[in-house]
Image 1 (tube, helix red, strand yellow):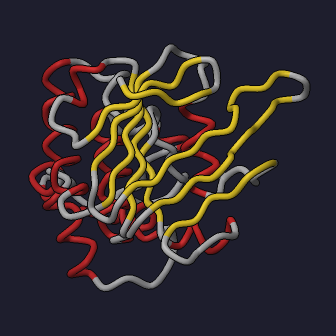
Image 2 (cartoon, helix red, strand yellow):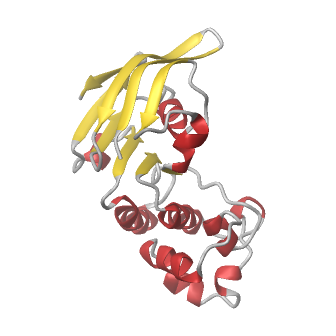
Image 3 (cartoon, one colour):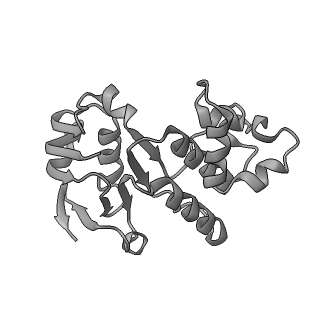
Length: 212
């Protein structure tokens, strides 16, 4: 599904972080966006996903233009996985009725199955408050499994491996490869080497997008 951004500007109070962003991404195209920390990369993803409301300009995912409509078409994985104080199952399904085959497939694709099968309660294991009973890598892969199960046409990635150690990062990258296959992908990072295989790499600087 394509993503169209037109004349997008956004400010926090009097501080403008995005200035007349224009971007068109074709269906199934992969785009990386680099830039310094605090430069507006995460803000851009939150606007695309519908977590933030557009102040000026427009965003469309396919024909979906409003924030609620866009949210249906987007799966997002952020730097720090946000888990509910619930079971692995409920964190993947977000509490909705979801067939077990979808949940177990998502776990397999996110490289969680071996760990989950070793747990006494399997996918019904409680993750703790804010995911406190699972490791950072496990929490991130649960978030990826949630995104896989949603099966949205557009995937947004916000520094999904930057807080992980090397071995864990490799496992998460493998899970991300399963998540992004055949999808439209926007991946923001401050590490350009993470985006080497993407179709396009852009640079966000001074609130504007440039070809990197």
